Image 1 (spheres, rainbow, N blue to C red):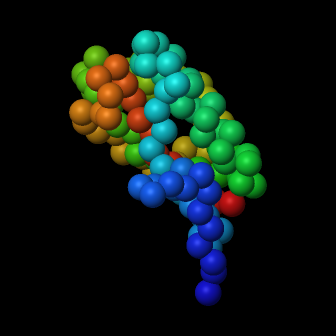
Image 2 (image 1 turned 90 degrees about the horizontal axis):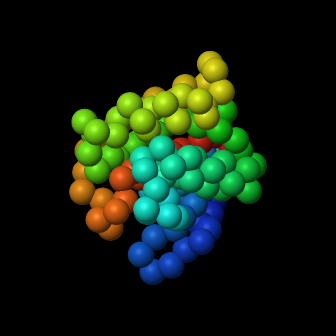
Length: 117
């Protein structure tokens, strides 16, 4: 049986969990909520890359992604443009995008991913 490893953990959550060769990242948001959806998306994707690389993975090993937008009608195309330019060709994970009220009023996008280690 594999060991569950938790990183950047507090009482409520872990930023990263590794189990059985899979890396699970919690929902990530932008550091600067004053940016538009493209800026916020770029910031989040950079964080995803950093966390994956720190745990022995990379963006081409992402298995699944959940993307939450504050306003899907307004921001879907802009977020997708950044996502499409970031993701290496031929490595698209399973993905779902939905609309949700996010944790802070200025946040426009939150992304959750799981990847192979």
